[in-house]
Structure formats: C-alpha cells, structure tokens
Image (cartoon, rainbow, N blue to C red; front, side, top):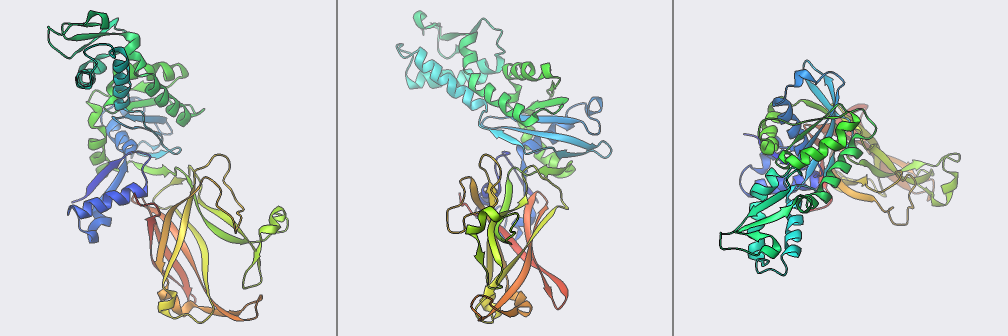
Length: 434
C-alpha cells in the first residue's frame, strides 16, 4: 500500500529524506520498499486536484487557460500557477516556480494575542490563562465569522460575572472594533497578496482558486477579491469544506496525476572545468589552471536545471566527468564517485566563472550529493602521458544523467565500454541533514 506525504511547496529533498527516515524508523515501510511505496506531493498540487474535483471546470477551464491555486492553511500559504495543456484528457503543467509563504491562519491568532495583551495589560483579565482562553474562542468563532463589516466583534470567553467595562468586557464578552480585528490580518493578508502578485506577474490569469482552512475566512476572501478581480482575475471558491483540500487532494492526485510538468524552484548545477576560450574568458585568464592533458581550463558553475524549467517525466540533463589516477586503478580503487549539486538561491544573475582557490559566491548553496560506484568501469580506464609532468596517468570517463521521474530527481551513470554504452545506478542524497 502506498503512503503519500503532502508537504508545503517550499519543502524539498532534505525534508523528504527526513520523512522517509521517520517512516522507516516507525516501521510503516521497510527500507527496501521505501522507494516504491513512499510518494511526495506538494500541498499546491494536491489542492489543484481537490479544487478541480469540486468546481464546475467545464464553465471556465479551457485549453491554454492560465489559473492559480492558493492553498491558505494554518501555517503556510502555497500558491501555484498552472496552464491547461489539454482538456480531453485533462492535463496541466506549472508555468513557473511555485510560491510558499509563512502566512497561515495561526499568524492571525498570534497577532490577535499581541493585540489583546496590549489592550488588557492593565486589566485583571490580562493574565496568560485568560488571554489563551480568549484566543481559543477567537479562533473557533470570531475569526471564522469576521468579514470586516461588523461594527462590533465579540469574544465570548467567561461568565456573566466577568466585567471590566473600561476594557470592553461585559458579562464575559470582550468587544473589539472592526479595525482592531482587521489589524490582526494586516501583515498576513499583505504577505499572501504580495506572494500571489509576484507569482502571477504580468500574465493574464483568468482564475484564482482559493482553498484551505484559512482560505474559508470571509475576510481573506474579501481582501483577495479586492486585490485581484480589479485586474480581471476571478477568485473562485468551492462549496466543499476546503480545510481537507490537501489530504483529500493527495489521494485524488495519486489516482489522477493531472499535472504533467512542474517548474524548478531554483537554478541547479555543478562545479566543473571548461576549456579556456581566449575570446569568451579573456577577463578571467588569471583564474585558469592546466590539467594533465596540457589543456588550459577554467572552473565554472555549469547549469543543469535553470530556474522555472518545466520538468516532465521524460526530462533529462547530463554532463561529462572523469577521474584521473597516478597508477592503473583496480576495481576497488575506482571505488565510490561523489559529486555535489548546487542551487543558486542568491539575488541577481547566476555566477559563471568561479575563483578556484577562493570561496563560493554567496547564494550558491551545496544542496545535493550524487554518489555512484565506478568499479564496473574498470575495463574502460585509459592511460596517457601528462603534458605537464611527462609522467603516465590513467583516466576513466563517464557521464552522469539527472532525470525527473515520479515527482523525484534521480540519477544514473553512463559510460562506453568496448564501443557499447553501459548504464549503472547512481543516488541523489540531500547535502543538508535536518
């Protein structure tokens, strides 16, 4: 039986690896079966499946329609922009990297807690237990009914004997103005709207589907509509309770698999050496080095996956690599190959030429490690004489493929043996352990 983890848009292989280890440690799946039985889907993708299952898509979803899905939950708000690739059969693809902000409903509760602590600091009802009781009632009732039009909003927290008129407490009810309640939403709604605007950009997006438990907030719906409907984007909500959009949507996703292309969130690549080009690299000649073959080389960041690349199940990127030895290597000496994958998470353009002896540019993050055993390449080792030292050396050449399959980045080894292409396994491992 498969186990599906539905995770925030901002999570990647590091968090997935932690969840995989937890599932194995808990005895839910054996280690040998984890690759086949554990599946990961973003909350955004689960939500689009739930939304389309519970809206009248025939009325608005046509081929090439652009639409966004915003899943406003308790902690994170995940937004994704989709294009309808075909209507029959229904197929979608992401348009650009999805967005994820920490602006869920819990942050409204925290803001309200601060408001109440300041309002009641001189009141006998301002202790932590009373404030906690008020926040519980606010979350369960007041917040869910608030739409910004009420002149007075009450939090029922006590008994008829509880009174402090100077602080707005009468018979166990605290009265708040619409402005006071609205101020608890200010930062959250601004973050959500800014995130959605950045995602949509200048594109003509016809519909924005708002789902999630916090997405049911009348006030949030009103703010989202005011922000986007004036620019021609219709905000669509669904009749079904959408607080279960991620959970139910994950099951629908597993069965339907409507999304055929997903956008890379970061630019990803490796550090490699390219042959020096006098025209292209003349400003960086001081950073060059000479390899054993006598070639002038320059260390650069080689992009394998540009940000916003649409990754489909037939996507592949490859690069050539080699390992050199001072003596003829045996199979055991070839051993394990390791190479690092980096993501560019900085501002501005992706760096190209690197300082071989210096530090990496700020924003170039070591994110993943590829491992493979080279022992099977023993018969492919070639010998040569160094143009630098005049001494013999041995080299093994191979290629690494990075593939996107079943929502995961995977890798494999390729090499030529006696004129025939061979392949072998490789593994991608997060560089950062959580």
